[in-house]
Image: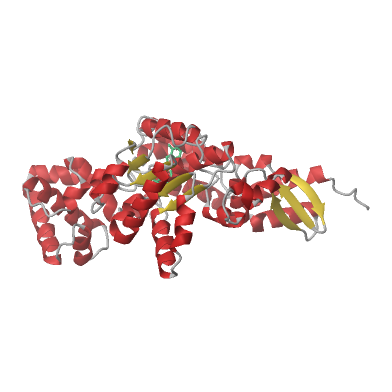
Length: 452
Ligand code: ADP
Ligand code: MG
């Protein structure tokens, strides 16, 4: 009856197998790099060389790995993710060059393990951004500074920003990288102001080797933060440190952004991301499937890519729906199943296709070839006022915002203005072929019917 004790080398394949069967969602292709380093005192130590991977495991996979390790060993073991033994010296503050505790440094840098250049598909819409990002990654502070990336939602800005951080961290693990969303920059700033700890704030942001701020357009709403960001920017820039920013609009088109910031953002490389073409969308779906080790037939990638042409997040959402549907119904993934999974309205596209006000504004500015700042401005010229009315009418029709809220978004206008716009476009679209055509063309960007 006595079983031979389990050798350490046997444990990992058992864990892998368990995870694949019970927790396919968390599995990543790099899990094969994880090894069991020891089993001591009821604790299985798993060696994970890369910090970003370790963070992901600690954040999202602890329970699943514990379960898997217990199933593999048949014992009530705990699980620990450890780095390379030779990584320990980097934890000394003197080597970090700042008095910051390493744990604090770790915390600031929460990167997704999925966002790397390897998993980024390059196509005509993002070729420039990709090339610039690669250049910055291999030559920070010197290639393009600042690098300013702008484009619509879900087109891959955050993915590129994090990929840059990743390559730099790989090549120079000691780099002090500040990666923050614009909101957290403002929040940290406000908290420091309130606590009277501006020294800490400046110490934290002005001693970096690279500052990466995601969604910088939110800065326009916060005057004090703009001021502080300006000084942070200058101090890093003058010291030759790399700055990378992302935004939903080009520097000139961010409303209410101080002129001195606009000119600073324009002084490096401003690169725009466009929507991916069909071939790129298919390639992205394949890359996403490969990332989670899912077998998705080519025809399904083509089917999804043909239906969704707006935003990559929605493409991914469809892929996830198909996989969940197959798993829940214990069926293999084929085209019929994909159609079924995506036809269901409660899960389906119509809900995800509900546009945000930003998506509407973006579609309208693109159609009329005007700038977002014009739309939000006080200008009353017909070339601007018609698109603005169109936005209001579309926002009323496709979102749940009130007249006041819509007016607020489009340049702080009164609800009667919105009402007038809604009525005017509502009537004209039945009489004026230009308006009718504009409505059709703009709506098909975001209000695609759930099956066609
Ligand atoms: P944004 O920040 O522009 O709103 P994200 O970077 O969050 O967009 O991207 C949305 C999703 O689309 C992410 O899961 C990202 O990995 C994926 N994605 C975007 N562009 C690409 C690409 N070119 N190749 C692979 N995945 C992509
Ligand atoms: Mg983003």
